Image (cartoon, rainbow, N blue to C red; front, side, top):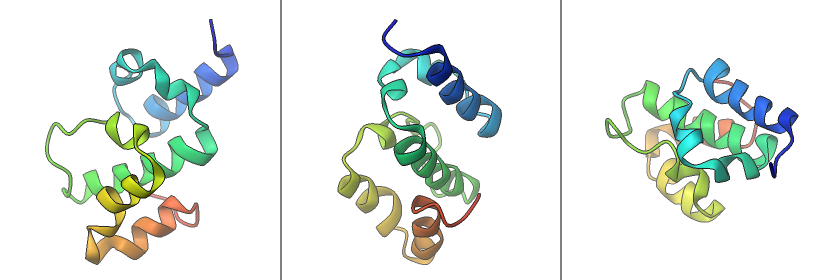
Amino acid sequence: MLRSMEKLNAVLGFWVGRLGWDHSALVASPTLFAYSLEKRVIPRALVVQHLMSKGLLKKGASLVTPFSMLDEAFLQKYVKCFKEETSTLLELYRGKGTC
C-alpha cells in the first residue's frame, strides 16, 4: 500500500463524511489519495461543492476531473468563468471561507 492508513482515512472521511459524496469516485481514481488534503483536495472540493449547491455544474459532472487539473486550468474552469460567484469561489479556494 503506497499511502498510509491515516491519509486514506483522512481523505475518505472528508470526501464521504464532510462532503457527503460517494466513495466510488475515490475507488475509481486512487490518485486522489496522492494529493495534499489541505492544499488541493479541500480547497477544490469546497469550490465544487459550492458550485453544485448553486446548480452551476452540469448534472452528472465528474467529481474527479477538478482534482487532476493544473491550478491555472482549475481556476479558469471552476472559478473565473462564474463571474457572479468569483469572489466567493476565490475565498473558498484560498481557505478564507467555508461552504
